[in-house]
Image 1 (cartoon, rainbow, N blue to C red):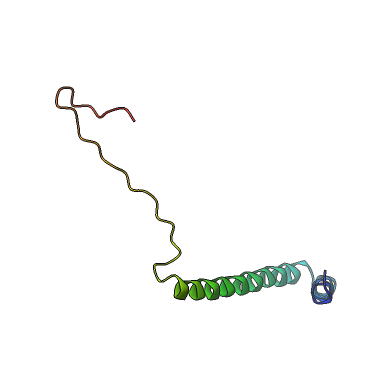
Image 2: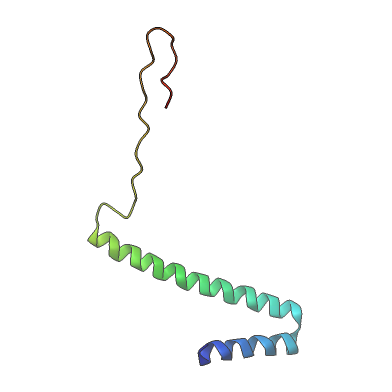
Length: 80
């Protein structure tokens, strides 16, 4: 771990000690949300950069289902 992560962990320990479990849990939840937000922002930046390079998008196109015609005699679909 780097120094910034250790400092953040130290801050969380101090919050728990000085302000109690409820405030600690709130700070921890907000820290997780802040991390998730930063990751989401970066993912969107990457997607926008890729969109400029690939104007059709980054979508994987799945094959469409082919409907087979019914048999004239039995009226049942062919087994797949």
